[in-house]
Each structure stands twice: as structure tokens, then as C-alpha cells.
Image 1 (cartoon, rainbow, N blue to C red):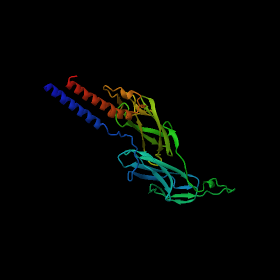
Image 2 (cartoon, rainbow, N blue to C red):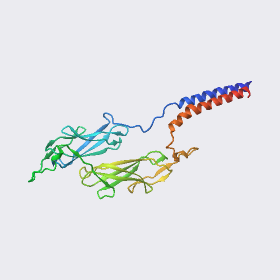
Image 3 (tube, one colour):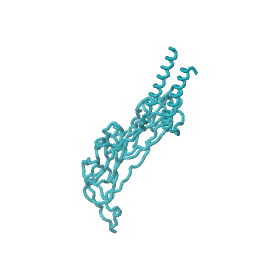
Amino acid sequence: MASRLRVRGFAVLLALTCVALAASGAGPAISPDAAVSAQSGQGSVTDVTLENSAVQTGETVRVTAIVENTGAERATIPATLTLDGESVATREPSVDPEFPVVVTFEVTVSDAGEYTVAVNGVDTAQTLTVTAPESSENGDNSNSGNDGVPTEQSPTTVSVDSENVSIESVELGSPSAAVGETVEVTATLVNTGPEVVNVSVALEFDGEVVTTATAENILSQQTTAGVTIPYTFTYKPQQAGTYTVSVNGTEAGTQLDVSGGGGLFGFLPNLPLGFLPLGLLRTVALFVLLPIAAVYLVLKAMAIYLGY
């Protein structure tokens, strides 16, 4: 009789445990990659610079500004260039809280006059003076077809191997990571040339290129003394090991140790599981397989209790 009571108590306890496990996993999964947008007060603009305060109609006007993220997460911070309060162009850089981004605007103005230049309401120290060039003998004006509308121009894209661009340092966000975990690698770029440029950069593991990117709007030290611009790669290594990490040949001060996870299912991160509907499989496991297993265990316990 005591043996039967112990079996009955075990069956009840087992059934309650299975029900509790099913209820604990029923919540919906939340993606960690949810998009973050700039909120009011999350971004700020400083050091708005007008590289040349006096130009002729049709000539390029270049304006730079530093955009900072005052929030706690990466966000898209809109930066809008205005001339006399009229919107001319907008940039939307993605900015990390600890890494300000330099945005560059290049426009041409076809109407002579004086303009107040600002980015997000922050004025440059000087006003922009646009004068009309002297008319040629035939009276032709090559800019007459623009109707006074500013035209955007993009900076030239160069490589790190060019004469005026170099990498000052490379730093790892963390010296260790698991297979499939995001690794951040930040390269500090220096531009000693006369103008703002975009720079093609390559992330390398043990000397082999694993991903490439374009670092935009690298400010010139000739216009802003001592300025250096950070660019951050994000990469998910797929194989365990110890790697020497570099950007265009400039190595980080520490190596990256990538672990394989270990354990009974440590091999799973190396499998190509991206095609599987993991969310659906999780739901099936929680709401179909687990209840079936619980019912089976309860029936099995009852069969033992009844002597079958």
C-alpha cells in the first residue's frame, strides 16, 4: 500500500512539473535586432563648419557637422542642412553613443546673395556669401539652367592606400566571443588631404578579408586640426579559433579568441540552420511535443499504479 501511495504522489508531482514547464516557455520571442530610431533629444549637432564662406554661383559649398548620439543605444540621427531656414539636404547617419559621426553636405547655389547656413538649427560661425561671376562676352552663363536650386555632390571615395588617408589604430570591442556572436572592431581613420572623402576599408582575420565597407565623410585635418574619425565593423565569426584581427593591414593590439560553445550540442552553431523556421519549431515543441510527453508520463504512472 505504501508503495502505491509513493507511485501516486510521484505521478501527480510529475504532471504538475510538466504543466509548469509548458507555461514558462509560452511567451513570444523578441528579436534582439529591433530597429532603433532617434527620439526627441537623443541626438545633438556640434561644430558646424563652412569650409569656404565666399564662393561664386555654381561653385561647390561644403558644410560639415559632428552628430552625436546622447542616448544609450545606436540610433539614426537625422541632420538637415538649411540655407536661410530653407531645407536643402538631409543625412541620416546611424550613430553609436560613444562614436560621433561627421556628416558632410556639398551643394551648389545658383543665386547670388548672403545666406545663413545651419545644420539642425546650429549656425556656422560665418555667413555664406555667393557672388555672380563676371559675364562672358557672349553673355553665356553655364549655371543659368539650375533655377537657383542647390545641387548635392558626394565626396570622392578613396582607399586606405591613398597618399592622404591612413589608419591610426584598430581596437576590439571584446577580446573574446562565441561562434556566431557579434564582434565589434573599430578603426580610427586619419585624413590629411585637402577635402572630405569616403574611404574603402576591409576587415581581416589572419590576413584574409572577411568583409568590406565604406567609411563615409572622413573629415580633413587641414580644415579641422587633429580630427580623427572612428569606423566600427560588426562581424559574426563562424569558426572557433584565435585570430589576428586587422583593418587594411593595421592590426588590433589584442587577438580575438572565438570559442565553439562546447557541451552536448556545441556543434550546432557551426551547422547551416538559417533556413529552419526556428520560431515555428519552438512553438511546436512547447505546445505539441511537451504536452504529449506530459500525458504519456501521467498515463505511464497510472498504469504502474494500477499494476498493468
